[in-house]
Image 1: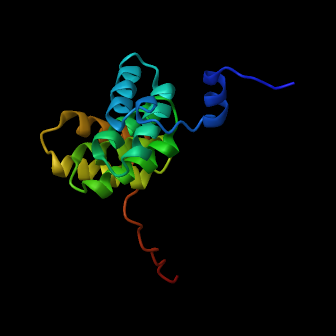
Image 2 (image 1 turned 180 degrees about the vertical axis):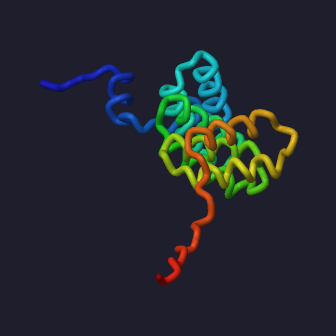
Length: 158
């Protein structure tokens, strides 16, 4: 008795989940477009999953890292957002938006001093941005900057 399977079922069993045909896999561009569409529809967690695949296919691409970081940020994955925005700054250290986004992620992680530094860098790189100034003002209002430590005062002897 032979165990005959239709040819299509045999191919699927042999291929498993690792399909080798390029037609069966989405390109990084297609993944990016799908991830952007999911983000636009406010499906940020799903967008992050798709954009992670795009980032794996094209590592170090700022055009993928930016929406991936946004997707993480909007889905509450602040540590992953921080890591992604740091990677984006490795690609483009002068990106004012990346400093702003990293500052926001750090603030959500309660790394206030680091957040303040990146928000200040964003403002320095884009001095006309009201958005960046407002973000720093909100951070300063919630966590006032500490003034320089005062040296202990000596009490005169009596």
